[in-house]
Length: 375
Image (cartoon, rainbow, N blue to C red; front, side, top):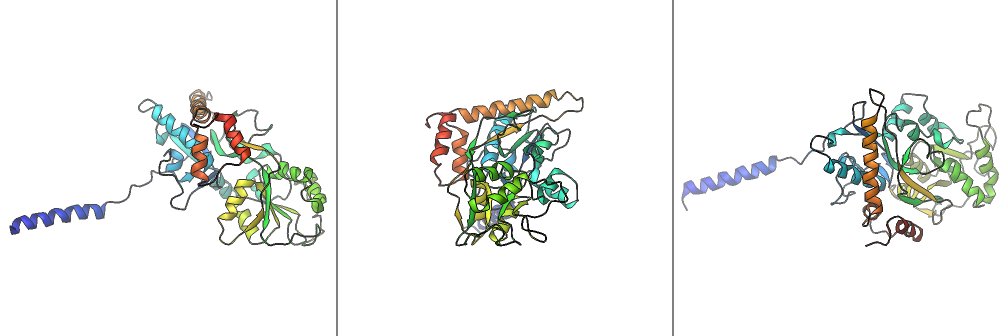
């Protein structure tokens, strides 16, 4: 073969190989933070697995995921997937230049709480992290910030009477309930104060576990030996400086509140308390993320909690907020179409989030009531 031709071929191959070697993987677009000029701001969680969290593990998103602004920023989970599908549809349906990925900002609720706590800010979120008693559900910082710091709350938020006033609420998107788990092989305490330096129950502050959850366990007589402790907790005043631990001075309160699910799951797996109380799927999925941490129970729920997406437009510079209100309303319109029509985004989100799992009979009936018989 001609030497010049060979040289040309080698040079061509070298150029192609060099181009491949130098080619970098596509970079994730920067996360758009929320400010007063952001057209639409979405509140998400980075620590509410498996419903809303920031993924650090490869392969946790489906290959045919919606690729909306939340997923592009590294957030995933059941509720995030549902919101992302509606947001992606909004962007595709918009006229050129009307709404783009860069017009949608993301507000990480858990990151904001951590910053406020580390700065020593006297916020409701900070109080959630330190108090060992109850708070009013409407004092949940997520709902205090909705309509102030973000427009749409996309996380596992339970529909309650307190939360239906002043907010837009989607159709119910998931059915779960309060449950509890214990360390596998651990013998439960015989008495309320068997381990005075160790709380009986751990839960996450600012969630329905704090009030409705503890009350549901009390009504069901699920922990009869400890009912006095549950009653004492529900009647307690977190703002009373003279309140004393049930087991006496120098002991731990019988119910301890944590700032987030990762912190609570780590404490549970390190045997810092006996009973982990919370929404069934959330507490079990967070414990499963900790190697070697096995649990018992978690087979029954004591409440019927429905998750939904909540919305409230932030005021705009002219105080009218009309344009943003229309965007929020448009989001809920697209969300409704994705949910109630068949095939439903609910089935897709469940399959991508709980891969290989089958919905419980109760959840299956719930899905049927929302979208009819599955096609």
